Length: 133
Image 1: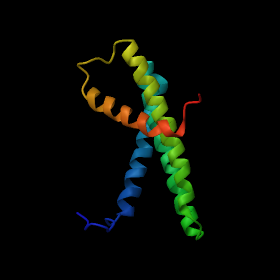
Image 2 (image 1 turned 90 degrees about the horizontal axis):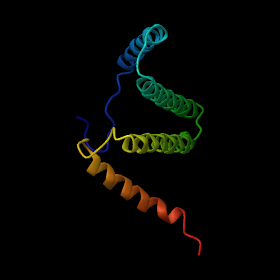
Image 3 (image 1 turned 180 degrees about the horizontal axis):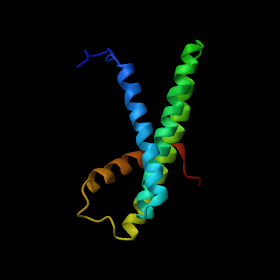
Image 4 (image 1 turned 90 degrees about the vertical axis):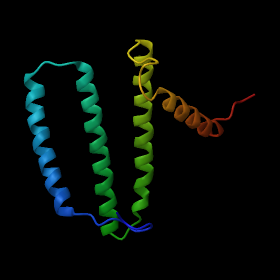
């Protein structure tokens, strides 16, 4: 474990190998998707996960490029925040539909924590959108 305030050493070779394996697996999954039948919802969730990975990898690539050019890589942070807001919006809409269709209910684990997190988020967002009299 890294000491407080220090970054753990990143094994770039290991990361590269894992990325190559993941890429190969994605190509295999693509072939299965083209030939199989499955739930549209599963495909939608898979597409969202792939899109999230794509957006994150693009942002990391931008970060590295800006660092190599001795430019401010923190300009990418706004892009990451925007993407996080988009994903949170998408997830919230999906959860609302799940609640309305009774796919999510009191027996679903984590609902109490979700309620608290959404309440905290709403309280944090409220000052950005003051009510007009």
